[in-house]
Amino acid sequence: MLLHINRIEYCEARHISSAIIVPQTSIAIFRDVAPWREIPISGLAELETSQEQEEGTRSFNATLSATLCGDAFELPHRPLAFRLTCANGRKYLLGTAEPPHPYVAFALSLPSEASDVTATTLNIESATDVYIIK
Image 1 (cartoon, rainbow, N blue to C red):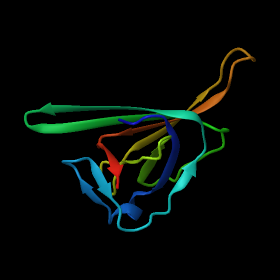
Image 2 (spheres, rainbow, N blue to C red):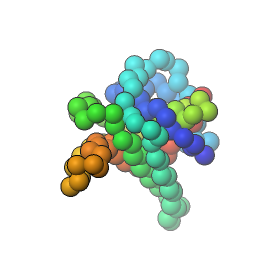
Image 3 (cartoon, rainbow, N blue to C red):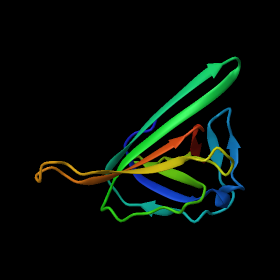
Image 4 (cartoon, rainbow, N blue to C red):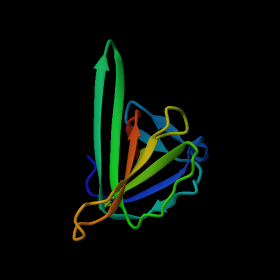
């Protein structure tokens, strides 16, 4: 169970190609150091995961949503993987070096009232499981 995601980092998916992914236990083991870069978020991120099994095939879906600090943040337009850190220090991997890669979108909220908050939201959707990093 993921509790209180307070840090999101990204790197190009190619940098984690040496990671060992164990789908049966939802574990990712890293043999090399990856160049993770932090995404500046405000507050906690929200992650929803689901899985379905149809005709012997299991499919996963994960959706991560976070409010960004400021509105001038951009991510590279290449396949990315994301490392999520919970308040208890446990780390998770969203996306791997192999396709399908997570889909990244930004949403800008411009309220009609001057007293309301303008915010940029980062949304990441993945068709892979979320793996515990060991």
